[in-house]
Length: 407
Ligand SMILES: NC(=O)c1ccc[n+]([C@@H]2O[C@H](COP(=O)([O-])OP(=O)(O)OC[C@H]3O[C@@H](n4cnc5c(N)ncnc54)[C@H](OP(=O)(O)O)[C@@H]3O)[C@@H](O)[C@H]2O)c1
Image 1 (cartoon, rainbow, N blue to C red):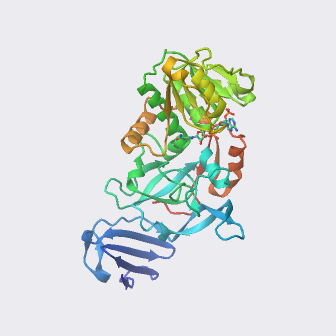
Image 2: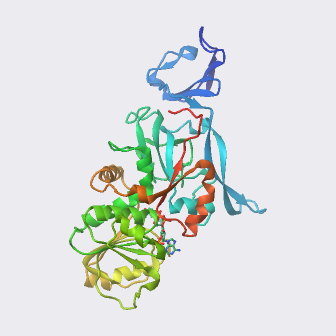
Image 3: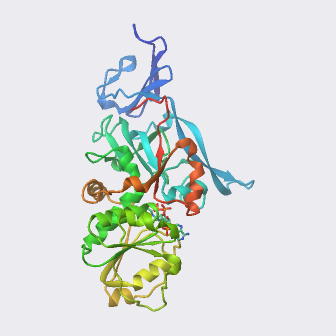
């Protein structure tokens, strides 16, 4: 590895420092003025000149601080070496250098909270594949630095799932580095705030509708049941389905939620604790389709109560990961059980779902669904509400810290 350094030029600020490092065929160029730092990594074939005179023909003039704030989740260890007994989420400063190898760095503007984020940050579910890790499975903002020709500094982008906040540092940060393949340009006439009002929840609801329609669902074929109705996926699914002209029945555990769910477009609201689910392999045929966020006995009952050729999008497991049913619904009523995986969605499908979200699936009631906005500082207090099922709709996370420069 070759290191080099250069003093400030004539007329440059007194505290300008410049330096670089060559490793293999890549070069890392750093220019620092006070607390701000311009930073770039490029393959050597893209560089012009050598040593102190080196400059990158495609260098981005983004203003980047030496460190940034992020909510990092740490393991709590027992005395026995290696034994992890829990996790702890802490807001801390992270050196920008940690993003050195990332293809695209996003100046985060908004993130959001999904059930999975709450499980990860509280340790209530085994979500994180490595520790410590910055949490947050979603982020939207502007490109601050890019080594990927598809994205330029200032582009507005969104990333959901893909491993963000699970295997890779996540979206609860002022700066987020990701592979270029994960980055989705924001559709026209949308914003970071809009994108995070949807986040993984909205993307998943749209993916579920997309798969159901791909399997034959059309407005007018019968009611569509949505379980976990007051949650993020549930609320957005109701809004999108009603907007498409479907008759939607919201199934909820919250007795006080009728007005809210009807205001999103549900034509009826069913309360879980009043439902008689029966035990027979096939119950009365009620649903043209269903989007299920619960799993367990609710999903089993849905399989038994579908109309002929009905489709169920299995999204979540807030009630249980178990499913006990028989083959009868599948072989006697032709029911389709469709798996929904928002994290590993192939890129072409991911891009087209975001386009649909901004067009014919665009939710019409985000003002009702987004109930709160919290800052990075206040984030940890909200996770327990998710795990305890005390949240309705969506919570946005404002990543903007006063005084921080924008990419
Ligand atoms: N497959 C995927 O790609 C994917 C993507 C996103 C989310 N998910 C999963 O989908 C589910 C919903 O996610 P979300 O972000 O919408 O979560 P959320 O905002 O926390 O909503 C979950 C909803 O489920 C119901 N619920 C919560 N705890 C429950 C319990 N113990 N028993 C029964 N119902 C309960 C509640 O609705 P009511 O009170 O109205 O019944 C709650 O509002 C989660 O399991 C999540 O992990 C999967």
